Length: 317
Image (cartoon, rainbow, N blue to C red; front, side, top):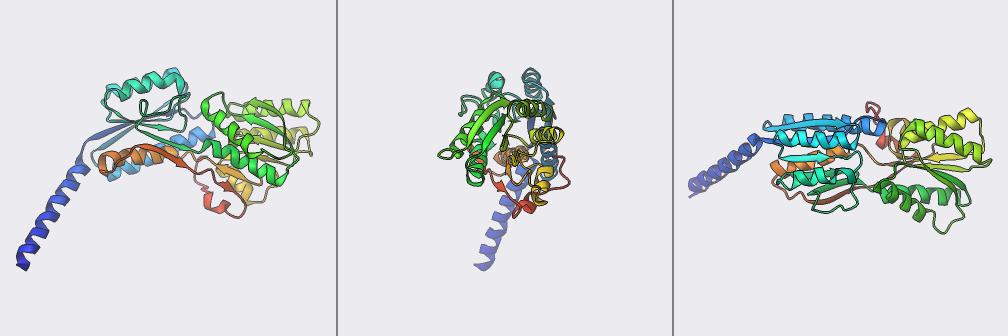
């Protein structure tokens, strides 16, 4: 009887092992469409997309991951069409600007392709455009920054540098307004810096000319903070107490670690989320797990006490 049970166990194990092996050898092609490296955060996106693609293809011999970068919505729509002609089973896409790309994404999804949308969601973000949505918490990014300013300098006069006029920018702005609610914080001005250090430099120069007293700057992105700090230093202004930005770039995290008074904190919004989306998409095919819905990454406040946990000196961002 024992031998019979042992034989059944071995047979069962062989079936499972054979199934697992078949799953590993299963041919799957995932297309990844992401923005070109127009600034540090998107450079980080490319780095993590390529890093995770390599790891996944090493783990799954039947997997092929094709990564394409595009500088604008029109180019990205063409890139998506090009990926479709290569016969992809899944698309992981971080749109340059989501609404202009909705039709291209829907066309892919309507063919039965698994779609993972990353970070930048269109105005209508439901299962008509994607199977999976992976993003940072944009509302919380703004709210975390606002609450820090409210707690630290509750009567501050603040200038805001927004990102771009797309939905996630508005989510961050709404979160910030919620964060400072009930305080004496006064917002002097809000202008777009396009998540670009040069544009943010120009906006900050304009603010410094218009306002003789500014206590705090909130900008939605670490790259923009670089431009902001340059403008402040160049102008020799000493009234500005600190700058709050977001993303978790290694340079800003290092400033927090070192106790830089101008960058006392940062708010996480990691470009590695594209890697998370890619891993979850692969799991849909190889892990036999249901991968659907929304996966949200926390907007952690990085302080001097915890900064070392988020510092990756080898990262490009």
